[in-house]
Image (cartoon, rainbow, N blue to C red; front, side):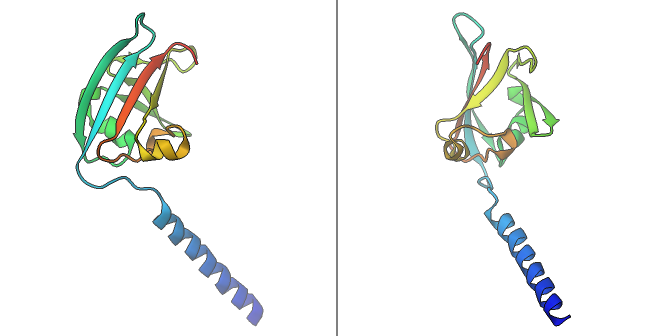
Length: 140
């Protein structure tokens, strides 16, 4: 009986350590005011067309928060089982089934660089000086 109590207590300590560690190690965006540059390109046009190239000020911590809060981007996001999904930005709308599709990239965002690509918008932590390029493409 005493061994069972010791094992149960040890299991509780391990579970608590994992939960606390996960909370402490979870990525978090930079708090406070940031400048974020957004470029939107329509590659379905010939020649391709730059729709927007502007720098915005935000307190958002994630890319999805930034997109939702920045009215000038006219971004529409929907929720899926994988998190926020960008449906349209700056008047460009994607069709997930048939195309065209919206993609985004960054050459200086830490989350994108660490993964080798930009992950889901909910997981992209933004920092001051980040620049993102959103591109409407006809094919991959």
